[in-house]
Length: 306
Image: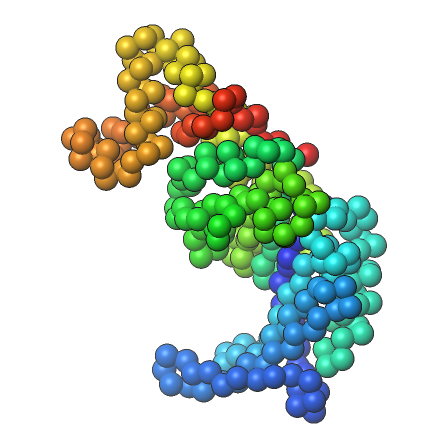
């Protein structure tokens, strides 16, 4: 089970009387000046989990839309680190919980259209969590921006996808999560449709093998799949063994610059075209070396989706 938070969309009408009794609302305005109203219902369960509901009664050219957002493990267990063993049983339990929310019309999890899903894996790496996070910060995805994620990790994102790596103990403020590096990818509507091949995907279209592929592909795109992150010593040794002393030292120097400098500074200092630099960086990857280093005294083991 790899799902944490999910946002489900329903095309449904909510009767005005129900909206007046339980829902808050806010008036909004489109760029063309058209006004519309959005309704909100946030239900906190006894275990502390939050179910967030948003209703758009007038969506212009579309039917009314209800969105329901919740964390599956939070709703079930009051935390988002306990593993869900029986997925179908879990969905049945959540259906019962949603049915008891006053003001929410009858909805079933499996009939909702998946609008967003957070896919995750927890890597138990012990005291190495900060070393992984620091080593991950210089890495880049194509077409994604790299940035810190609060004070706990790093994120790579665009409008449809976001991948994070962070310290689960710090994020949860619970020592039970000590040593856990959480890897999490958020997929929004278009990305979910592309993954499942469905125009209106439901939760059971998110097969475990697809979610596992999302997590493994995130590691592959960072060139970390089945690769350890080396120290300065081990990385230099690998590169010199692969390319000889002079070329190996050159590639090590380029890697060190890649980790510590911006692409603009490297291009300016070397008078090199970006494609030329990319070709040289590829030689480092071809030697099985990720484009980062660790400050730990030993290489960081590969991250594995279990």
